[in-house]
Image (cartoon, rainbow, N blue to C red; front, side, top):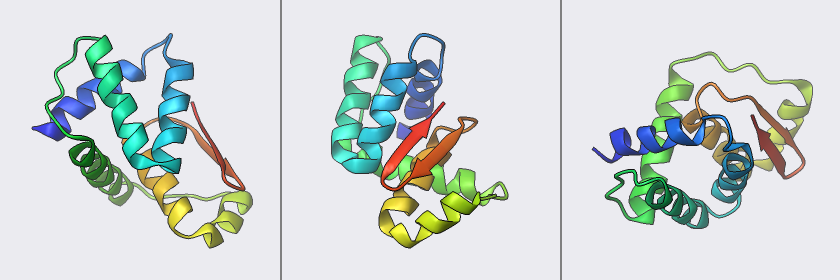
Length: 116
């Protein structure tokens, strides 16, 4: 249930006009998952979307959705992304969040990430 609600919030976030908010939430999720989850809750409330979940529930659902997305597709990494794999947990978090933002472009450099 949380995953379905979260996917509806994600779909709304991916619409035109939300680019800055999407980038802010993406960065927050990678840097501090709970802060990112709270930003998602705020966005859902602002847009009057149903999202009955705690920040912890959202973080777990994003990890689950991201992992499922990554399992369903072949991942190709650029040389720069491969170099960043040594970033370990941070880079894995960035990729799981990228899986949540399915269909979005993704770049990583050092500890900076972007999504479009």
